[in-house]
Image (tube, rainbow, N blue to C red):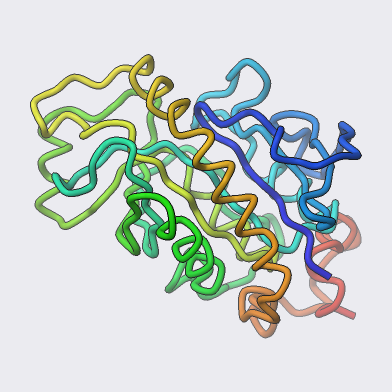
Length: 283
């Protein structure tokens, strides 16, 4: 059974793509509250859940988002696939503002964020060679490229923020071969993989970052993200029906054989806290 979660970022807060049966759901998790109430609905008969990444009114900065609570809350609602909408800066001249990018790699420059569910007495080592689900990403690309200027693949460098890059940083990232830059893909993708959910990103380019000798402002980011909002919603909506027919995926079994801690060494509190994620592997 497929259930799709949508995480909306800067400029993408509107769950109006849903058909009907909209209802808010308040969710508690062992990691605290998510950024906002979840919005449950349907798209072409497929159950779908929307979460505003930064919360209503954009009140959480990228470093303050409770990523663990967000991903856990979606898992708790039975979500199997996550489509993450993200505004990004371009580090390439041919990735133009208002273009869409479906990245396939990520480079992590964050330093302040909890990036695993498995700590404090339990260890799991998952594979993350391909941080975004290849199958889901292919669906997103095919759907997007049929109507919009879309780039397949590319490396998303995730910076800590909330400040934008210095010109020196931006030029170094270009020399290192990175393609787009943002502030939220990680640890979102890491946690989704630990929770055995497929995650793909629809990244919309809002600016050229500062290597292009232009300043970047949040007003510009929001303006361009909002301009692309209808396109992002269209891409997500048309992708959902294809996800329903996609079949199984290795992301859905990422924890199999990954838990290194002996079951006898896992205390009761940890078992209760992480049971949603690991009960099928730990008896």
